[in-house]
Length: 112
Length: 112
DNA sequence: TATAAGCGCAACTTTACAGTTGCACAAATT
DNA sequence: AATTTGTGCAACTGTAAAGTTGCGCTTATA
Image (cartoon, rainbow over all chains, first blue to last red; front, side):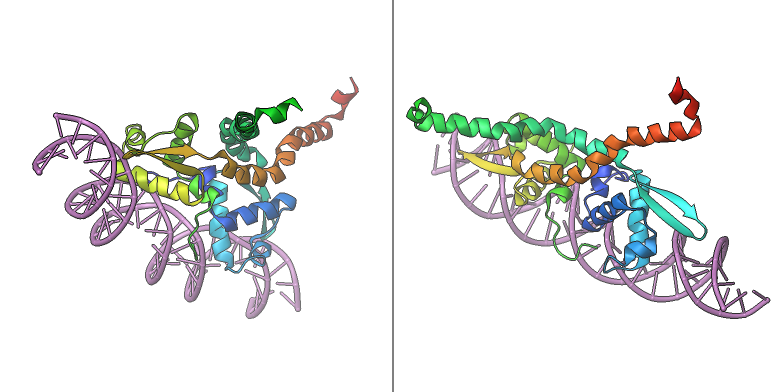
């Protein structure tokens, strides 16, 4: 139960549509209409996703006449990267652990 | 609107309690009761989180008598790491872009 | 100036989900 | 054998969230 509004990066990237939006605008800034064409949802639905992405500053806006171009802000993604840091050693060490298991099973192989 | 059950890693780590659970059991495997003592929620609530984490294989179980030890499986976290890959260049290039902006503002500084 | 295009916002619906309480069951403990 | 302990599961509640439709505002275009 979210006691307060969870507008953090982790919640933002939880939705697959939002992840796709980020991948798209990371390549090129786009308007909501252009974005909506890539999905099977309405423009308003895309705008809602954009709003959530904007609230955690993963996306910034740039007005051009009556069009609004949404830009990707990679900086905020660092938070996820930093959180992953504590686990990197673990999935890297998996090979070492496997190595150790193999050594315990038949250490002779390691003498060849 | 989730049309199907979204039991992927991204949805799993969206919840702050689940992220904390993962950080805890990454250091040491724990039972649900032991985990619940770290949070302001019931054991059953923790079990629900564990269930979600188990469904996307971020957590594995190991029975020891009537106790169940939950282990962290770092391998599944690679999916997040790989998704981040497409953005790493962008936040690294930010310094280059900033450099370009500064150059456009006052290129004289670059001649000193 | 009238009209079309591009947006955001508000209201509403449906579903997922985080939490609770209660209960049943198996394994230790007495 | 009775009791305590550790756990999962089911039922229920409240809230967030994803989607829709309709509307109004602003900016181009005819």
